[in-house]
Image 1 (cartoon, one colour):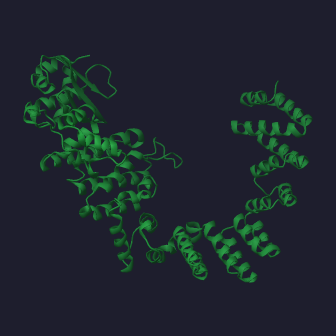
Image 2 (cartoon, rainbow, N blue to C red; image 1 turned 180 degrees about the vertical axis):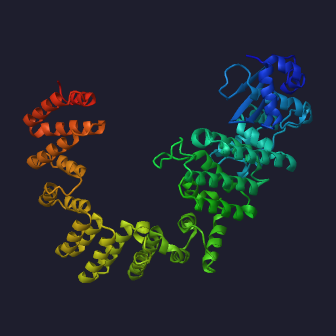
Image 3 (cartoon, rainbow, N blue to C red; image 1 turned 45 degrees about the horizontal axis):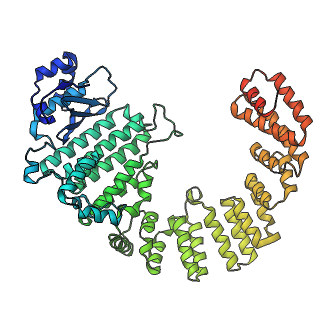
Length: 576
């Protein structure tokens, strides 16, 4: 429904003809006064004409809302994404007052002589970065675009360009003064977003508002990269610190199990921004954002780090490699070794690879395995074993909780076997590893080398971790010993139950004992998961002893009939 009608053919002229008295009459005094208050406080931001028929803006308050005012035929219509449903809202009024006040100083104000002078207000496509051609564009499409006459190309852009593209183009065309205004407005808006308690507990809306502000400054990546970088660092740091206070988890209750804030769109924005920075300005900004990511403790932005190779163009990677290697040679390197190695690994020769890995492997099981693999390819088994032992023996009270890795320990045992380490020495090493990391895989590897000599290790694992020892026996198909552990009730009930199902038809009597015990335990628990366990166990029991299964089923239907959910499940599995 039109807010008002006009004889003008462009929206700027229609708004210019509107008076404050007419606007007050159109919306009513109450709405007008509220909108005027928003306008006077500077709440209208990012106002711009996208063409001669459309005006867009953002209005901040308790939240940020997007407003679109358009000329359709002879009617001026207004849309706002706020929840008000009583007609024209105060946010629309604020935008109209701003437009009436600013007139032709608003960004994107259409010039009447654009067509006659040959000006379009659109920057050449090649100025949009990366050569003007998106990476996914085909050569055929590029050739087609380049063959178009300028006028036809302009018409296509004006007709089909999405709003983000239009805004980026307009922002790129700003002078320094106007660019500074846009940047400050975005910084102020982000500050207000984080001060809004409602948004701090609604991740989807928070993401929307943050990305709205990030989009505002996309066109300033080249002009103000340091400011944009600082803005992104502020977002990353604020969100990570907010996790400590229980914010950004999606509701008001602090709960580590809730999914915290994460945004693929924001991650992509940061990666593309970093990639776009000119080489001459890149290093300090990359370092600033890299430090912010490295200081985070909750993993919300881990995907940005994992995509570090994408921060650089292929042409920049050789220079990055030399920078990292020079820092290592001069003992000034302090970066994230795993990520840096992953980024430049394709550009390293073996000597450079060894240099970087030797400088960094001691704190990373991943890099230790990389260095071991390099030495093994080169036939240096002794060097490989030394590297593994250095890593394993690294001092530190929290060593195993931080760096314990089955892959590293298995590698140690495998190397010892390759080098035919004497059984006594091998056994001693294996005992040490198993004590620190009691896993079935380690005992399996040791038993393959030691044979019967692995018995002390079996005793050790049985004592340290019965569940892992049971898993080891299961893999070796030592069923008698497995059942002995089941009958001794030294395992978790879930482990016993799954093993019984696995051996249901080969050893039905043993399996039946476990099923009966499981049903007896689960039927005492009044929740849906336990009910499912009871019904499932009964179904398995029926396949080996239908008489006993029916007896239990009758008992449940007689004595537990008030548990309606249990009865529904039983009726699904067994006919009444």
